Image 1 (tube, rainbow, N blue to C red):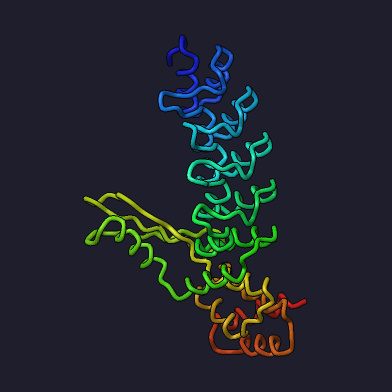
Image 2 (cartoon, helix red, strand yellow):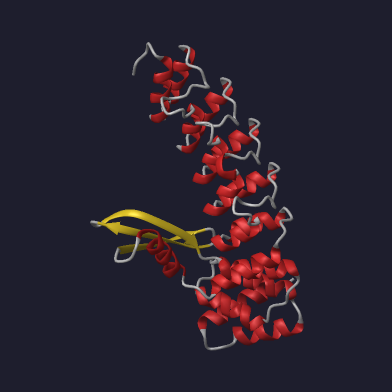
Length: 308
């Protein structure tokens, strides 16, 4: 580290996540608003690298939470895109504007919804982010969350009064008939051409599963995309919010197709039926609980257990 150049030393400390070194360089005269040779601010780099301690130090030393790095990139947007919840909270508490628009019309909420970071979405909305501010493509956030397949993002948006519920329901139902993995591969082929090898991972997340597809070149990942698969749960949430009484057998089929009592597709269907609580729902749930299919028996038992 070059101690004669506090700014250079500050960036080294940020890259190394060395909070003690950050303090030393600030005391040595480095500005908390320092920029590197590429025009990136120290605060932005700490935010995108998920360094909440460094972010707090820079803010306490006077870094402006909304200053754009390279004139285009917001620290809050960078943290939201990465799902760095603690950094997002720190920036918001320090005065970052939840709806600040960075380059190309993106806001932190847009990034968080598109990446399916439900805790970040909830924090941004609690701080005053507009739940209906259109994405750069002119799309309501609720529709984008429905496409992403994130029940957590949809719940947060609904809790803050998000509109475009019918449009979002149409999008969620559309994805119920699609193979997420196949759609991700098709998107990569459109971007990079056919004939590649792929590797797929399925990661538990947000009460469901996120499908990750990587395109391989020479056996190594060269590009990739991912999407969550909670579209059935989202359809159920939106139907309930719109007062749509989806037939009980259809809700049961949504639950059983995931085959997992912890999955949001299952729990939202059971909760929706229990909320309905009419004689027909009780009759069907009792019938399912006494049937031969073990999954349907479990689902019927869950519905009955949730009845008021």
